[in-house]
Amino acid sequence: TQRTLVLLKPDAVRRGLVGEVIGRIERKADWKIAALELRQLDRATLEQHYAEHVGRPFYEPLVEFMLSGPVVVMVVDGERVIEGVRQLAGPTDPIAAAPGSIRGDFGTIVRENLIHASDSEESAIRELKIFFPGLS
Ligand code: GTP
Ligand code: MG
Image 1 (cartoon, rainbow, N blue to C red):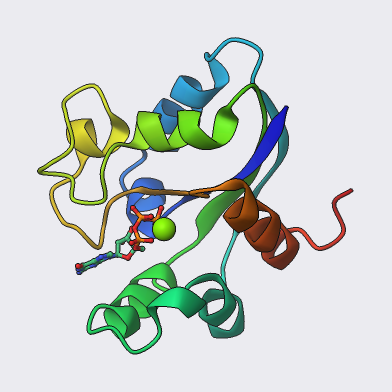
Image 2: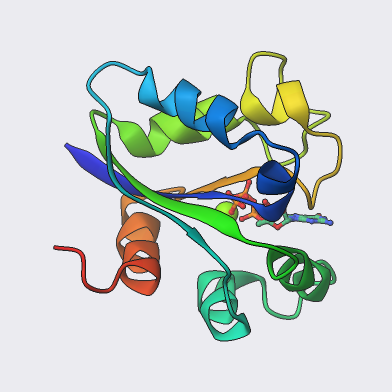
């Protein structure tokens, strides 16, 4: 069974969509929330998390956005949860995301696309270490 890192970005928190999004994750059969916290991130954490995007034109505005308010950081365990949460989220661009997905239902702006979810087992392991270094 898998474990993934999920972030509900500052737009989701500001817009009061936390319950809606957590509800969609929570209702998936046999998935379990293993950790959950409302947390103001710092630049050092985001530099690690988004290391692959350093130097891209959207990187600095993305970091500023992610610093603009608290995020919900959570760990979710379950059957094929890495692929599964990505599927619930939909594609990065919310306008390209189908209705029924989180981004498709609530998003319009690429940067402010509500949710992050690890995109592979390797990413999940790397990101979980950044956000929950103490978690077994
Ligand atoms: P995450 O789950 O947040 O990692 O999104 P993703 O895996 O769908 O996208 P990716 O890792 O490629 O990019 C990380 C984040 O940067 C995205 O979720 C967007 O918030 C933002 N981003 C990515 N590409 C662009 C872009 O072309 N323009 C802008 N403005 N933002 C982007
Ligand atoms: Mg990504």
